[in-house]
Image (cartoon, rainbow over all chains, first blue to last red; front, side, top):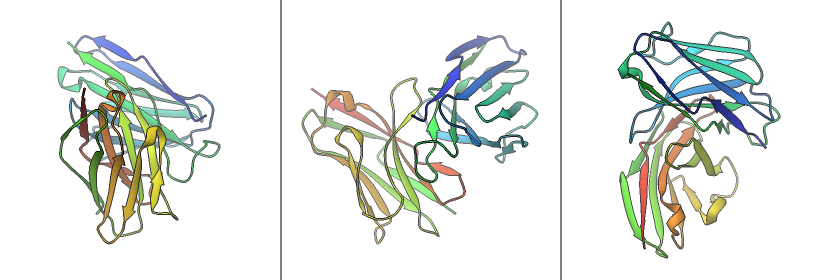
Amino acid sequence: GAVVSQHPSRVICKSGTSVKIECRSLDFQATTMFWYRQFPKQSLMLMATSNEGSKATYEQGVEKDKFLINHASLTLSTLTVTSAHPEDSSFYICSGTGPGAVSSYNEQFFGPGTRLTVL
Amino acid sequence: AQSVTQLGSHVSVSEGALVLLRCNYSSSVPPYLFWYVQYPNQGLQLLLKYTTGATLVKGINGFEAEFKKSETSFHLTKPSAHMSDAAEYFCAVDTGGFKTIFGAGTRLFVKA
């Protein structure tokens, strides 16, 4: 149990366009979802935390107008990279947690990640 | 502030040898500690976690880790490495605020 999916797994887009990444909890209600960014050969950097029905809380240095996060339901959160530029190219990973997940407190369940390449 | 330090960005072992990946943490409150594994172009998979209770934690794929409060460490071990263990390993700490801080990661290479 506690499976998180992401779509798409890979996306290539032109500079200036917007890209939406979906994160779904398949068998539990994710009251909280997290979005991370991972640069090559580096660790995960938390971008934002979103609670269902509330505005996302962004980490310092993350542009909220550039990285739009929506968590409209207990099973879906989306990250939209607006006006993407080559420096936004990265691996984006979401995770979720919440009641019903087969876990103890504070365990997050991670999606498989989305590789974004901006040309 | 909480932090996680993984000693050694790369570790190389021979197949069948002991795997030891080091992790030290800093936390002002009792931490929850995690080890995750990441294969290329994939998300993170939980190997094991320490929350409370027994300090020696057993995880999947034969891995285990011991929480040593006096040393603020949570090193990951496996008695005998397999080729399939080659991956990136992340130690992480969560102090109860649903905010997980990850170490920089250690890439494990397994030689035949």
